[in-house]
Amino acid sequence: MWLTDEERAWAVERMGPYAPKGTDSHFNKRDFINTLKSLEFWLFSITYFLLANSGNAFGYFERLCFAAVSEECADLLDPHYCRDTWLSRM
Image (tube, rainbow, N blue to C red; front, top):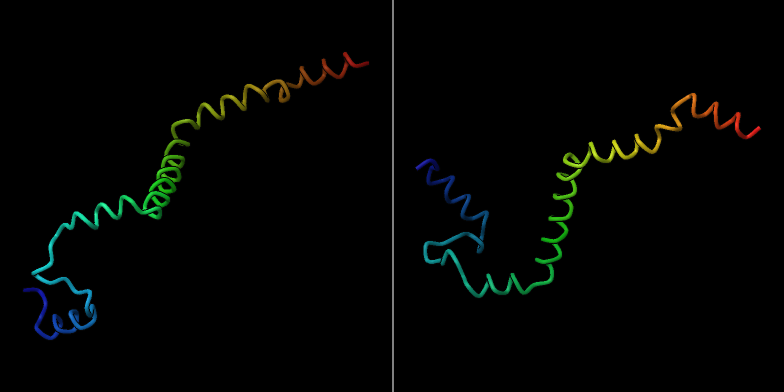
């Protein structure tokens, strides 16, 4: 064992009534069903999915975003376009 008797007693005392026991079941079907029915679970899951997915998707679509912006702004950055536009207004 990696904990001494004194350390084990301190850990069990610190956890109090929430300490796991050998008689506890590892899976409770009723708790699982109630979790799936809870609104908090679904709100958290959807929020996490949207945040995680959008953070990962930006790296994938980054080139497309910058390419679209650069195509729209290419005319504005071209000095000949600006000069020709200015001359055509006169």
